[in-house]
Length: 329
Image 1 (cartoon, rainbow, N blue to C red):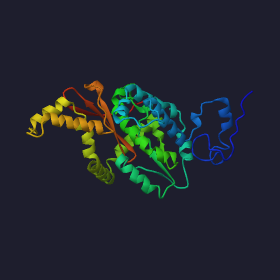
Image 2 (image 1 turned 90 degrees about the vertical axis):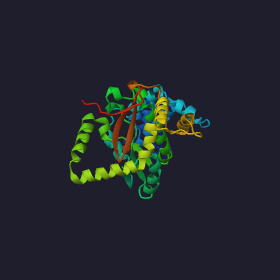
Image 3 (image 1 turned 45 degrees about the vertical axis):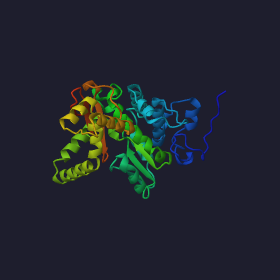
Image 4 (image 1 turned 30 degrees about the vertical axis):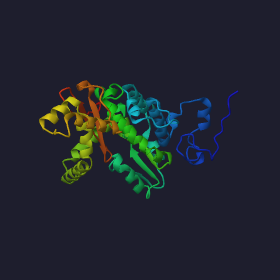
């Protein structure tokens, strides 16, 4: 005998929107039939529901037990193996498949006062921005920081080459989880844009944005934005991508070349200090090795647009930056 499942009007909606069923999916989604049949629920989940599913997928990939005490920082960072990174990005494909009908989901995300935040997404600034904007809007939408694998060429795809994405995934997970209390409260949602599911639209959007760079007013505005971002983040990003990421032997050569040592601060002291900074920094991850096949990809995300670069830590200690191109189809 089939189990009878009843979703009452005042029950929380099964799509995990945080709303009552009568104010959400009632009349549009037959949740009783879906639950009764055991059908895959993901296509019917709200954006908030998909955010919660993804957070659970991250914990599963990293094999973190959220009911236990917080793991040590070193243990937490060691969990970001290539296998874990691949599982995290596979979850994106499962939760946001390429045939996702994003427009109805975005329409459902609307509220009495709903805003898309396209300001500075750096963790040091986003929390202040959310507090400030939540005074005026009861729903704030943020563009998801994780790249959708559907758009990326194989050589830059985190599912095919997860080793490259370990460092960036650590930073993105830290950022994503820092926003989870806002998502739980129903104030913030991470959305995906229509171009995440349409390669041609993504290419056209980038080409259009590039053409706008020839407009004097927009060119001036872009220059001001770049200067503003550099003033805010240059030192911090330089710390991540240059000092902490440099191999120890390269740091030693530089230390000797610049004659930085003295009787009280030696070369070994300098290396020990850098290593302690690596250990204490929650957003830094030691590379698996050197060479171009161990490239580390970093994504700078601000103003609602992606600026992508591939950072390749080579054996010589030099660093190569190249464009990260999306797949053309």
